[in-house]
Image (cartoon, rainbow, N blue to C red; front, side):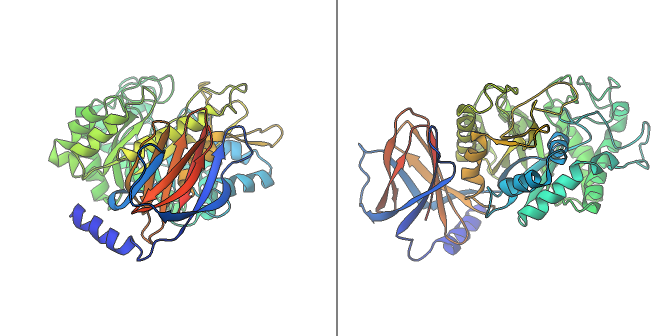
Length: 466
């Protein structure tokens, strides 16, 4: 089935006569180039690449996973910071992130069910003991978050996908009686908690915010000082199989993309296996979500992709550092993002979402003091926006690689150059090349017996489209 779908896609996507020129955009350290358009390069005949010259080889005939999108998290903190900015800066931020023509065209976003650490206070949607969810209300989200999400949706247009993750059930459903500090879901509340997800989706859609997917639990192995809840792999399997999957079906929400794990790459394989080896649980699950906080472990992404090729992978959260005004504009943050996006996608991820899209001048607000870095910081005292290199690095993917594109084969013969490539349904091809070395690199893009010359400046990221 997958092979037939890929073949059909390739037949529809491959143009009869590929373009003779390559459009180029560059972001480079120590220059003014930030997603800067450069002089196009021309394809010239080259039957075989030169092994001794830096080369990026792209084979559009070998297509892999479809891309769902690139984006970030629309949290309470992002929304509250946004609300405190002057109207002109609000418009600037919306266009910068979500407008596909004027900005970098985010097409995928995450939000949270109940509060998370990046909320100004801890809250839930249902009162204590209300297993029938009669008191369920998303009223806390109406002040900042829902207006912000609706503004993002209006700016982005279609396609724009939103998935939601819970950090914790309400305190009364948990063994520790607290939304914070870990704890576990009490067995007697499993059905009520499962119906809670469905109710969230229904209420958000009444507010004009369609939900595309859900994760079962944010970081289910971390006891945090903020909202958190623990699940073993077997507990998550049983909850999905016996409670959450059936509750979504009963609510007519089986269309939702349900994702397990939503934690780090380190034991990604074991957590996927715990659920996928049970067909009764696996049938409800679209894919596995993951973060980056404990080591890179990019090979683990590939291992899961190879073991369960019918299931998807999605990077759902990463921030590289606690907020520090002295280092917020360091170039290295862009390279951290670029490396992760490129390697995760090259190993099978169908999309990639950053953590908070916007934070304030302290890296918050945050009700437990867990202040963090974001690609854009808004100074709520002055109204100024600070776009870091991370914004531009993400933009080299989100702006040029649109939902529905497929990753295609791409390799390099130079250890300093990382590359990934894509084919869109209309035949447009895109390659992203990243140079983390201290020296400029001249290279060629080699495709089907033709080559185009390009330059990858030191510490840069380059997008090529043809």
